[in-house]
Image (tube, rainbow, N blue to C red):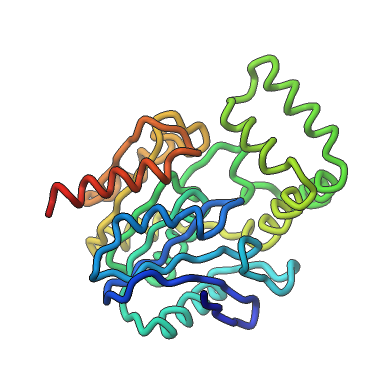
Length: 269
């Protein structure tokens, strides 16, 4: 168990393996690094996997909710982490919101990245219910009220679900991530700190093409939040990108992706 201290917060991570090939691994919203340990089944003796807790998750701490995470701060944090790991180059694996952080890391440090594995990644194009980064600033007081007085929101969501106007997986996401005050507070704090980050998808595509960076994009056939259709345009613009659609929903995607990647490794060995 290790911590990286920065002027803005303390980043918790654990390291698995001692190999020279370093891979940074980011989990999804509401999870911790533990949820990504399933990826250890694809780690070889040549690898070091760095499992990271995002801020407001696990043991990672952000010092001031009024100080948003921006691209320059993120570049500084990850650069410091790489210095501590003595890694000149690295790979990225990210699930859901962790996929967005992987894309952000690539955007600011593309010259050091060898490969990306994106699993149901946020940040390319997601459903409007899920993508909190698109919410306007004036939504902040409303979201804050939800933290303390969620009854009206639950009533509306349950009503929409009852009449079939809301996808079941999105209904499950809203209800499970808002079921307690601590979880609702987490939604608010994550939105305040992470919500202003807008990826430069065009720049990411140009860098990927110019550098021939290896991309794997894994999505779920039954994922209503990050759908195969939503990532289609992005995937078609990167010739070397390998797109795989697995017969699962968003919640089962990490385990299914790990099994798929393991089978690919076994076939190639």
